[in-house]
Image 1 (cartoon, helix red, strand yellow):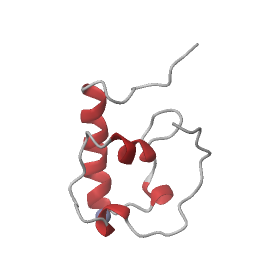
Image 2: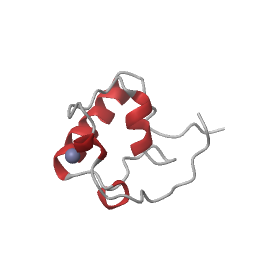
Image 3: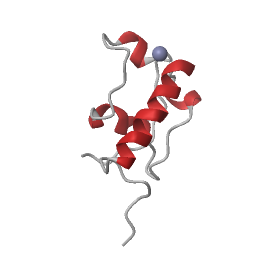
Length: 78
Ligand SMILES: [Zn+2]
């Protein structure tokens, strides 16, 4: 995956509300990985523009993905 510079999202509409499926799948790593910082924390809502409902289910999805070993809890230390 590309190294991502933290950039505030320009449009402030919730991307999950706009997408066809309002359900956030924890297996959809490409999608939910965008909402974690380089320190693998969930990005705050003012940064991503995700609405409150989706921020909650996004947090759940990220936590499930972590438990399943799909996302790291902490960045890899060398
Ligand atoms: Zn939403």
